[in-house]
Length: 450
Ligand SMILES: Cc1cc2nc3c(=O)[nH]c(=O)nc-3n(C[C@H](O)[C@H](O)[C@H](O)COP(=O)(O)OP(=O)(O)OC[C@H]3O[C@@H](n4cnc5c(N)ncnc54)[C@H](O)[C@@H]3O)c2cc1C
Image (cartoon, protein in one colour):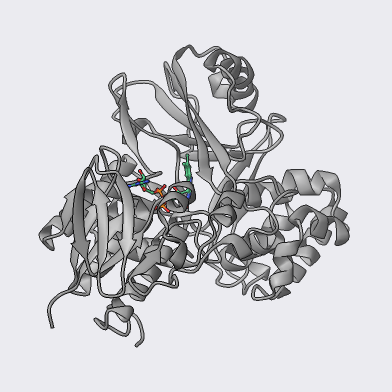
């Protein structure tokens, strides 16, 4: 049989994962990306001699599809994955507590961490343990979960405002990119069940050792080129024509014929490209909304933090990562601060952010007191993720559309995951499977059960 030609629109993680899966299954692949580089929401750039990322990205051991993708493109050694969950949490009061897993069965593996958590009263810690058990028992397949805010559900379990904003927020804000109060119970429950309440090692934390460009875009390009894929950058697709026997991608005045198309753009771009016959309502996609992530990048004259990363509590500094080595910094220390659900910080000038965050550094890190700041700048991603509030589950389409020659991919599609790298990679594989099965190439992707 002639190898089918699959055109992929969008070169973020979803498009890259789809492209690699299609190439591995023997398809001819053309990948169209509107920007000058692949990688989508995970990108790197030069800033005054440093190689910086648009935003700190982390993953967990339970992100199995993402980790398999890294292994496939030969990038698994470009990330660090903790052998055992250990997250230091610091506060301006000087205390540092650890979120660790212990060698007990789930959920007892987290009991010592919870019982020693210093910012909740003892009764609050016991309550949090009981709440976690109830969270673990929720049925993720129950559509009613997405009708409720996590904060309301927590309050109904007797969780105090302080526990919701201090303890539960610590986990939900960076994963769902919303405050725990606002997030959909379905997404919050997914995070807790998959990360913390199924396998004891699910939440071991991972992060890139080198700029993201070298973790995703560069190695994926090598793999795709080796497979003979055609990669077009600065190639903004303007229209898709999907017929019964063929498909056409219109890009820069050219019409590229393909057997199938995978649309892997963000939802707003997808809404403009999806033919009505695909059966995906553009208004639904607009309803997914957007939530921002802001990163603050601070270069200190000397080292101010000994740990590779620190989560903050009682401080606006949510997560701080030491990016000195990854960025190529020769002296001093470069710390990147990731601010999720950052609506309050978008639109504020760098000066305003400096005025808030530099004193916060001094309050949180004794080593930062009196140390000169060589550089301080901000990267803002206004549409970092969709807004994972209640009601979003029904707005997220599955990979397969009503047109057999068209599938959609993206962290915003129906993956069950919040908008994450894991969700993006899963969506890419699902879309590849959908078009390849429809084309009769395969019944399953390599490595999957038939
Ligand atoms: C600052 C920040 C921090 C984050 N932190 C984390 C984290 O810690 N952990 C985690 O798991 N996730 C994190 N995320 C989320 C994660 O990066 C995304 O969910 C994921 O990368 C999205 O991948 P995607 O392929 O679905 O979409 P995208 O990466 O948005 O890719 C879509 C691509 O389509 C292209 N495109 C659009 N229109 C067209 C067109 N007409 N023609 C051709 N190409 C087009 C775009 O240019 C883009 O490259 C973070 C995101 C940001 C922004």
